[in-house]
Length: 340
Ligand code: MG
Image (cartoon, rainbow, N blue to C red):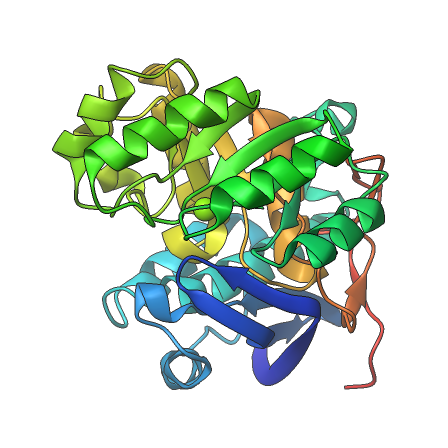
């Protein structure tokens, strides 16, 4: 099996700002596996928040040694070996996991959603993310997001109430708020969330820093909308300590290491009675397709990373009025549209 990978700069349509900072582009690494005349694609979208950059991903991938011959039913054993190359490096591991699943699906001639026994008509609506911006730009972005019935708004920064007021002047659409650990004091966070409830916000993501679980539990006891963990949850073993602290979790393939771990998390979260969101980084249609194939299993989707960029190197995954559309192609259901 032949493994190749290449860094690719995803250009954002608009400067993207959240509580941690701003960016105009994100570097992603597109992975390709080839064996038996079949190509599998994967993607790593590294985030410094989780200790990864494009160069750490490349460094990790340089160490991957794949068997010469691969049996699609033995993908789990290969992923076990990839997992022990080094700790962490979850987006790099996700790239291998996604590429192997894509390859396996294509080898067997079935779409991934079908391989997992899912109904492609049961995909949720994805939200569309509005980054932090000036009132004028927010207004423009809301107009551009006209076809999306659910918006996700970044809060947790000074001036966030103005952003919500601006949006609510224009639309009464379903709104989800993400503070990205932005509030540092539990009383302030509580006041903000109670105010957000009055603005008819559906849920709040990660109101406080990831390790402030006692404070978040204190807030949860006092608010009425679901509190969803994002930065506080990366992998399966983070779940037990979130019991009673959050109402739901945001699973991202780039945080957890790929599809295999995400499935385990979905099963455990269901047993714990947690709501499940599938989220993403700024990523191409490869990473988004991997999550979208899983999305019939979850309550909320925030899979708009490929919609926020202007130079997606793949196509095949789409949405209509926010509804994620899966196709009948084998594997992930995406195809490269740039010369390699
Ligand atoms: Mg988030």
